[in-house]
Length: 238
Image (cartoon, rainbow, N blue to C red; front, top):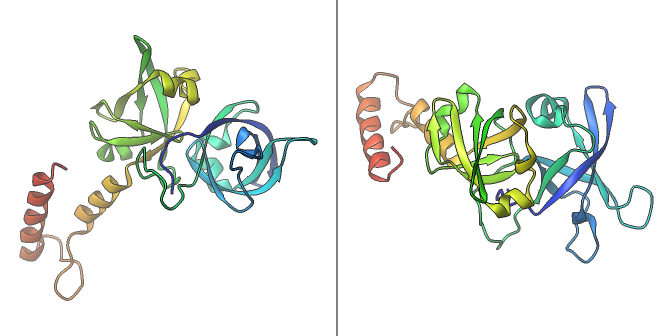
């Protein structure tokens, strides 16, 4: 699990294809000794994609300060990693340790879809950015809710159809790769996992006393759904 608070920016330095899969080599200061460096086998989010570190080259030798991960064909096809150019800047975050501060929001590192930058609007020292999301994700994106954009936890300012906008404060602009994105650039999107669970609960319907889901249109389903909707509304979700 991650938080969407980027620890460091890295650089993609090499990509090696293995059939439809690929090995990615990333350079970053998370490898530097004395800075609680990453270790073999741990999870790391690269632009919001959860991957496993399987090779580390520490400073002082060829390929210094790099680590390597394997990306499957599914990951390459469903995220921006498949089209990421050599030399591109990437956002890096290690998995949240037990007892760590959840400063952003709960992020799984499982990308839901790829969006694109629609517009960038300067706002003093901040930057308002409008993104286009896949239509199927629109129901999960709500004003003042959370969303992870290429590994960065952000608050949704507003929503219009399948588009949404966020505000990048100076710190976020400086410490992540989002500020440098051009209009039309692709980004990885992970919606708030709580929104997904609520939507799934509403789709499937409540279980009956026997443990099975109520039949669509049944009196049990209708009365239970009414109570559920009332509770969600009272809690501020609807």
